[in-house]
Image 1 (spheres, rainbow, N blue to C red):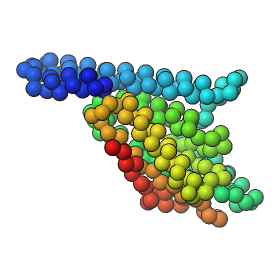
Image 2: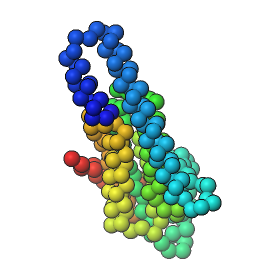
Image 3: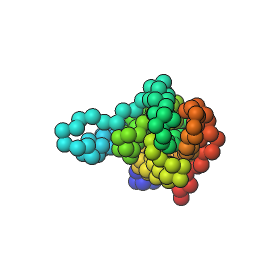
Image 4: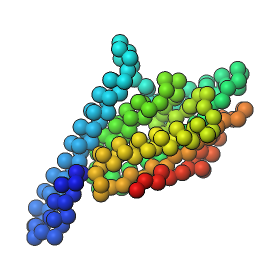
Length: 206
């Protein structure tokens, strides 16, 4: 919610409202938050389209987990055969269940679509982007060493934080963690993701 709406919410918290009036007020707040998310979602998609070269109508595809696993396995096999280095980023949005309980599933679904569009605009064409779980994303970064992968992870997590902070307003602080892992010879995606998840770093923002 916006700052003026937050102030009004605080003011009405002690107001002598009936239960029916408080229910109406909560429903109105939920509708306003959802409208804000939808506006931000459209703005993000427009920015993604503006970044595409003229005549290119395709966007970076958000793969489901099986598709992501298949494409990553293909890339790792290519690295092993011809030489190369790839890293994987694991990103966890930790606060979505709280938002779901407070504002409903529709708000979370809209926010996730917005996050997917934002991620698509932050990665290279050669990168592979997947949604691994309702609140988890994975990104394979070909030709990317461990130091660069961690820097990229921090940058992406920071942008996602700002996106969610804009959607939800100052009362709800996004909680985002990220991890990176660089594959060695004859390692698979499951091993890399497991290690990246074990080394998660929580984004610290004031």
